[in-house]
Image (cartoon, rainbow, N blue to C red; front, top):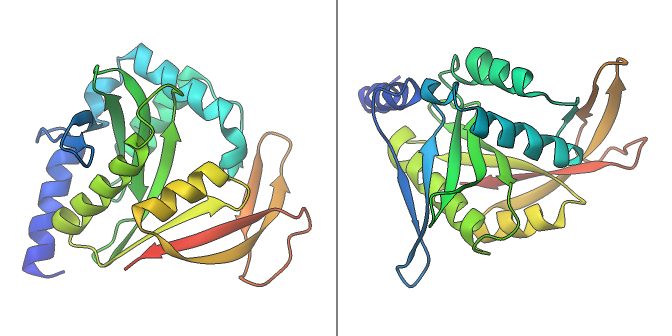
Length: 213
């Protein structure tokens, strides 16, 4: 790791643990403030309203995730506490609208010195600014390039998720390589494993891999 990468990781660590306050203000093209993004930190663990929204949103959009299991508030808190907040390579940003209402979230994972995966995009509420998620995505890409110094940002989206495909195109992703999904069910949860590009999915279910470089 280079000296500049060490500085970037130190900055990220301070944001992840909540030692450094960080907000990303979201402006539309004309300069109007339409929202703000705030990183999920330990101070949100006692915010049951936030945990309830995250749980409800995921359950409502479960078909767009690779793991299918009915969520509960306790499971959400456990994930935030023991997975999200213990990782140095993962972060979730909460998206608030111009009225400071929580309306969605967007995150990243698998952060290295060279690349990172944009992940967990969620439009939780319907009646929000139509460009809010796109602007949030562009802002997070810029923040990652400036703060984490990554060269490659990649993503994954289901081929039947038209809204997410349109959003990711507007954010700037390209590549769009199609991979099959293979269903794995253990009776408790259903997982979809990603196969090799060009192969066929037994369930006719596919995923695009995208990239910004």
